[in-house]
Image 1 (cartoon, rainbow, N blue to C red):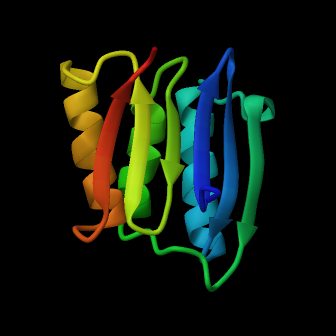
Image 2: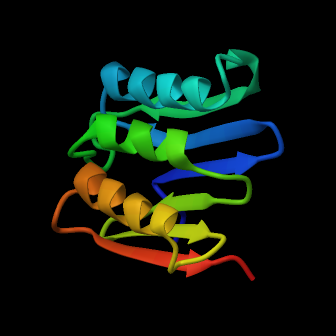
Length: 118
């Protein structure tokens, strides 16, 4: 099963891939990634499609905040009933903040899993 939305933090860039329901959400995510990279918009790869049938994002601002919080190696996958975020450590303060932001972003009906990097 492919992820409906993926965000990958790598090197000096961020990749946004998948589908969102509207242009406002797309812009919020791209703006969050650009802010995380200090305004370097050319380091943001935006492969987000706008599709009204895409999975809902309850709070795009929370997801944009997560993008700004993210670190090298993080990888978010959003599926119908689950958000899975690979992080350096699942037990540190940054990861706890990420979990809260993800729950706000995806809503209470979506399970949030943090997975430590191998």
